[in-house]
Length: 469
Image (cartoon, rainbow, N blue to C red; front, side, top):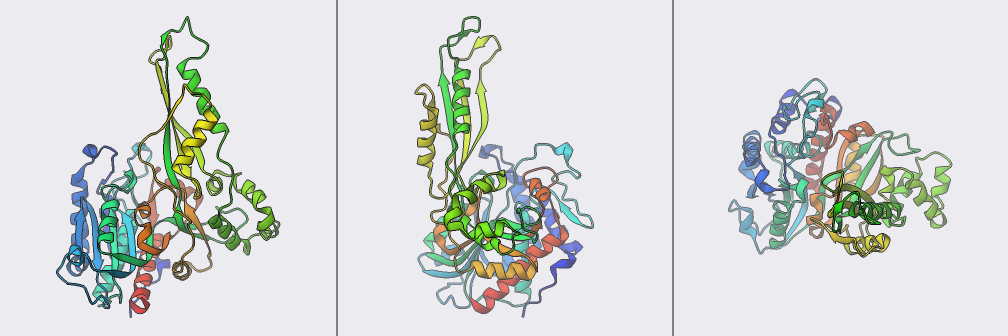
């Protein structure tokens, strides 16, 4: 029987140091792969192999660039070859218990001088482990490995196979890591009960009208697309302008896009989210949510009042970059702007283009996609394993209320959607609104208690999979 230490006391120094050592590896993803420092990824790989020897001795594993795919064979996998590589089982149909995802790369640091500790120092004090990636997402990589290493030391083995997939380029869309690992799992014929990745957390004082901590298990994610608006003109001297310069035409187009957002819409997942929260809400919200059938539009309008919840009820529009002109007294020959859309399930990338062209209403403004795109999760819904994740979350953090939602951003999970019956994006760490701002921001850190919660959650999950899978 796996012994699970309580999470309330926080991790010990040795466990904290293993995470801190990973945070000292500056595994920054760059959109131009030539700018990525691969030596830092090599350092992290060497640390993982040294810190978790049982994992690397007993699990089959292979690499895809710097991404790492592990196979922990279950006792019921009679077709396993035991040859030491994941690829050896190619062609065999594998019914797996779970695919546990996390990623090892991090985003760059904009304001290094504003950090309490240098972002890649891996500082540890009595309360926190500091550094870029402490929450997003190295803590989950290390917590999963801590749990598996502990289980192996106790002789625990799952009944059905578990896969661990750690990407190296999630922050730049996962094309070289997650895409290839998901492709390998398809070659193996893998179909898992549970896909677990980053996304939802437990928040305090974030949900209006709810006093208890709220655990949001995400069951899908929004899509994304960036649209380029561009204008070309003849230019000339600013003393003799035409009726509309390239910059002026572009500015009007951007204003139209921002002033005409996608319509509000209450999706089935958002409806389930508010229904689950209703019982712990104060009046008059509780009564209003009891009439979702007729009050749906009103609920959508209420959610749209805050940016944090508006993303739940519409495809969002965010102008993010604008360029044009070379000198104050020269008419610009070209101007361009970029608008980022996060696409609600039910809308599509094609809808984004149609909507943008419709509201711009100017044939001299070229509207086109720029960069990578991703469609939203089709028909996201809470699968059967959501209740298992909820049960374990309540065990780790008693007194929470559990609901569902969709990830407003993009994660590696989208590459694996067809490989599991139930998708959950969730980690049982308790964060305030201020804590959430540290993710991709200044002073990213994870408390010792939250890191203990992560490890405990993964130990409990493995124990359940070993007993009941």
